[in-house]
Image (tube, rainbow, N blue to C red; front, side, top):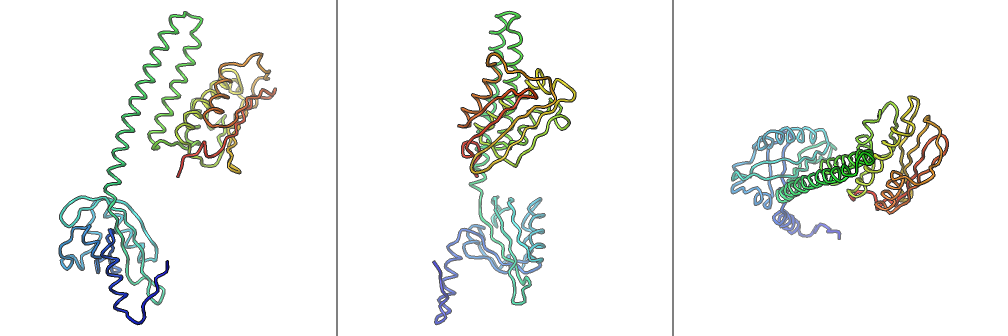
Amino acid sequence: MTIEPDTADPDRDARFIRSVLAASEDCIKILDLTGALVFMSEGGQRVMEVDDFDRLRGCHWPDFWTGHGGVHATAAVAAAREGRSYRFQEMANTARGNPRHWDVQVTPIFGADGRPESILSVSRDVTALKESEERYKLLAAELHHRLKNMLALTQSVTAQTLRAGGEALAPYRARIDERLVALARAQDMLLSAASEAQLDALARSVLKPHDLETRIIVDGPPVRLRDRAATAMTLAIHELGSNAAKYGALTRAEGRVRLSWRCEDDVFHMEWRETGGPPVTPPTRRGFGSTLIERTLSGQLNGRAVVAFPPEGVVVSVEAPLDALLATE
């Protein structure tokens, strides 16, 4: 909808603008180029708990902020003087001393000569949103703590069960311990990244013990994984790295691994390729590691994972729909 100015009744336009400013829940301010307050909307005075704007008129707006807020406010005024916009989120008290979180957008107002002649500052109270975020973080941290306790308990119970089976089960105990540690690492990354993880960071974290940077190349565009996909990737990449270090390319000094991925036509493609290791022969039976990799990636990503055994080195290819893999914006 386009609102045309009423040239026959300019007072009507002024009344309309005043009513819009009064109804807005944003604090709309006009500053001069030094950062002094010139105007504050009626709605802004309400959310800022200002009883008499005349007492604030001419005050230096950055002085209402403390700490990082003051630094941002000063930088915002400087940016506007140079013709640039600036946005930040910080805390500041209302006129009555009540703390609030504000999302602030500062924009230059240009004159007829194309140069900034004043500054528009729009502050939105996001206190409720910030409080919700803090509650979410507390709940996520509590859930993370309980998951790690469950993993530790699972590790203990599994170890006791396998010990009862004697030395024949000792190798399985070590592998299961490694997988549980990999799961715990995935949970740490998901918590620090708010239930999503960057594939590049996840892969590098998992592969760090295996001469990352010198013998392993990790290459691909930024991809944010949702939690389910991140867990599956962690287990699979851990399994691939462990197998390469024990049986594959990383058992030889000249051995190399390349983990790469790309996204095209709404499909995610990933490849793990080993070279320079001992000659590979296809196994006579499907091992637990290969089965875990294929089932984990295929099942959790709604895609297809294939483990191949050419003589020059193991190759694992993955294809999955992006919507099953990526974290939503």
